[in-house]
Length: 557
Image (tube, rainbow, N blue to C red; front, top):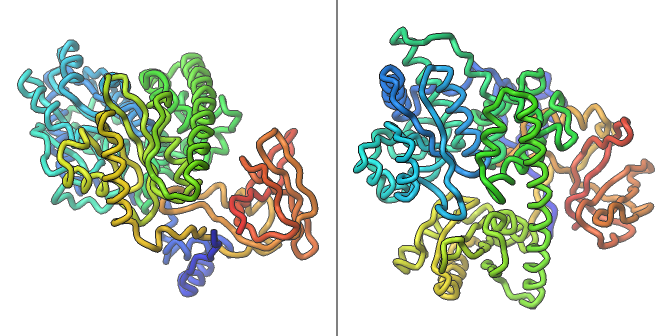
């Protein structure tokens, strides 16, 4: 592994510093291609206009008509944090707009992902007039056709990449569909639903049918959580959406469910950061969809009852602890398998005992360890099938890779979908070996040589003057995430002492230029050399009510 420093424009750095940006942040932002301080002013008025999102106004008209006629609306959610938050945004806004709306979450173990014909049959028992998909539906050609045969209209809100054939829905809102001029193609599913609600409010206002002036900014904490948890690229508009949500949380106006999820993990909502959304609230919410039923997660997000929210959050916290145990056991099995490979590169893994709700996290862990795109499979509750989940590296578009495999071997993949960095698929168990061979061949062909090099990008050395609690807090308060990474610094240290703490972590005392630093290397027990070049994050460590600066060592060259 090689540690490298991000390049940046000195002109941009100087312009940011002259505009009043902290000198360290000016360098960090310049390395993320920020040229002006205006790009860092996150204001609701600066969000992209809903009119730019193809069919958002059409969707608003369809929903306004349905509300006027008191038609029955049914949101078909997805079982991850993006789908849960998108559903909560829809339920909360539509009910305030006077709609008759309920929601339905597919059982991932029986029905899988998306609006399938089987799910439409289940939905039809509720006698809906309109099905609204959130964070899914763009690939549900058969499901939408089945709904149409039953006389049920479908409104699709999604952000996944469309396939060759679009569903014959009443309306499709997706920034990634053809001819959509919306500049932010990275909008999460919850972001798409939020924009549809903005368009609906404008439509109801135009019709004089707005019963009360609803402040949709009150939903931005849900939008922020779904956006960060779904690991979509944080372009300017997504950063602004996240900023609006964090502002509400920090001001004490967060939804009871999000507040209680943070409290269940011992985090203070008033100091919430993008890290808290991605690594604290997000995994707890996702645990419901991975191990049980995401209805619990959605209930946590839609209730205004503090006690109910606290109960839901405690149960989600318990599920998350259970998920961690399952994941640890699966990772140990997979790493044992890796050792047997004796240096041979492999990207596909399967064990009959693995939990299908956890293979996505396992793929992510293995991808980080092996520095290769990874697909992990588990047996599906539907007999004879394997469910796979994959994570990729920058430089390889995983969904496009699966698409190429599907085209070269028709019928080999029963269904697939996803993004550049994450995708899911279903294959017949009997076809596993054949699929592995086809996928590994395609991967070798498409994976660029530069993507195979394990390099870690950093923001260079950290001056001693900036290694303070104030600067650590300043960094934590910014918006970081996919495509806009949290700062990672790099320096050479002498190691004064090292010891194992909590059975799984290494506590270090490092020295640089005569100054001592407390440091942690989480999830690593191997002793380090007396001198090391390390990539690390500046963090705030709280112990017994006292806060100190700590270096979290992430990589050692």
